[in-house]
Image (cartoon, rainbow, N blue to C red; front, side, top):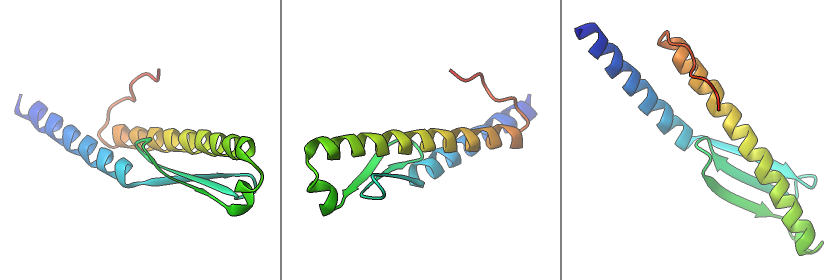
Length: 101
């Protein structure tokens, strides 16, 4: 029983460390040949959007499409990064990865 409690404590500690890592990791994506950059955290929290003056001059519709595209790509990259890190965590502690939704 003590071994199980130690295992559970180690698992919770590793998960907490992973959550902190994901919150502190920045994932970027660009669109329109780098005219817009979206940054989100590894925990999928939006952090920033940068748009060049050149893209702004192209109009609201173009800006909106570029921001949406960059955001979708940044989110996809962030989710993939989180999955990879979670898989690594589970492997390190000897557990199978839970089913993906």
